Structures are given as C-alpha cells and as structure tokens.
Image (tube, rainbow, N blue to C red; front, side, top):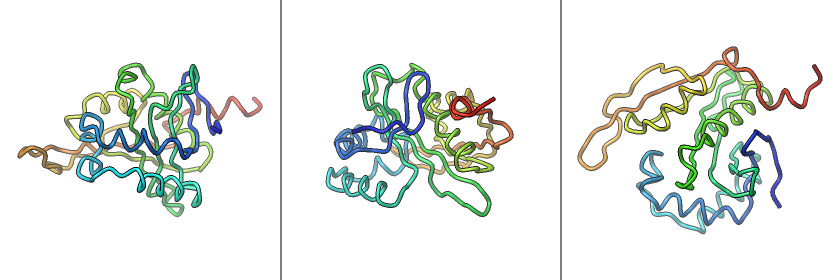
Length: 188
C-alpha cells in the first residue's frame, strides 16, 4: 500500500514499497536513465540488492522516496535527500525520473520542489546541494527552474566513452525557498 508523504499538484512522494524494486532495478540497467546519474551506470543491477536497499530505507527511516503520479498512481521516479548533516543543517538531493515517457512533462521540477519542501519545511535544513553532469542539460534546466544556483564546477570529473565531462555543483538555501506544499497543511 502506498502512503502519500507529501502531495504536489501532479505527483507525490511515497516511501518505497517492495514492488518498487523491479522498476528501480530496470532504470539502473537502462543507460539512457543511468548514465546521467553517476555510479548507477557502472554497477550490475540486481533485483535482490535493490530489495535489500528498500528494506534498509524503510528500516532506517532514510529520506528516499518513490515519485508517483496523482493521476494514475504510476511509479515514475525516485528522489532522495542523503548525506544529511544535522549540525550544519544540510543535505544532498538526488532525483531520477526513470520512466522515459514522462520526461519533459514537469514531473522532475515538481518532484524536486517536493523534496525541497521536505528538506526545508519538515527537516528544518538550511541548505540543499546537488551535482549534475554538464551533459545532463535537461536536469540542469530543471534545477535552475526550481531555483538552484550554480556554485562551482568539477572539471573533467566523469570519464565516459573515453571523454571527460564536468560536474556542475548547485545549491539552494532555505531563505530562497517558499513552501508550495507543506504550507497547505498549516493555518494562515
């Protein structure tokens, strides 16, 4: 059974369910999806390992979510807040829309806003950062649209197919974000 942790206009964040293991594993085996993510492209996807990871996420209360459409409850992606630093109140954001037929429809931007709302409105974090490969222009446009700002560039940080690619580092501060979803649940 899916639980709706935080609901947007078109999608919501849900703690993963065991059935999510198969699509998550399939996404990691699809180079169109996995190459822009990083290390996922280099590993051998394993359904058993993904099931173990989902068990660990649920057991440890990690902030890793399935991205699900409101319209038809279709699993389309995965989002996460990792490397959470409670002292400095920071985290790293990761997102994948694994269902390619949903690319370019605004789900990535909405899922990013949902994750930021969890980070800033529920976890009381001060900053959220991310890194995206320079060739991942779709993701970079999405993150800029949501309000992330470039803060640096790691030159030639990723080698793929005998070519070196830069990583664009970005961040957002809590003061730069206005809650679009959590505030719906609070009195004016």
